[in-house]
Length: 147
Image (tube, rainbow, N blue to C red; front, side):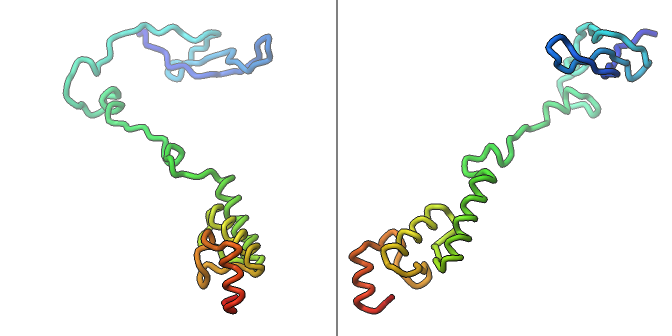
């Protein structure tokens, strides 16, 4: 009885460009081997013969699948490289005694800039917002002995 072969690669080789290519195939069912991929005759799917969901029908099952890019497709997701850079910058700031308002690169940079203007390590917990500290604000804070 003839059947439609379910082929898989049995042996690999190289073409003239040294690309890896399959050189021998085998049928998973009958173990027949062949040098080229068998040509399948197109036949109408059993799925087209029914309108309602049928358990065990591959076509029905495929229609229920939802494909998603996951976290990679989210606009607010961050790459590992960026994540590690931000946490590294935060750790560096903390090692200098600076306490940024958050771990984002923007918060760390604002805290470092505020520290430069103040002449002391910035602390988000006890000082005004880092982006509001100017040379003038720093002078007032020094005069009033806030820092």
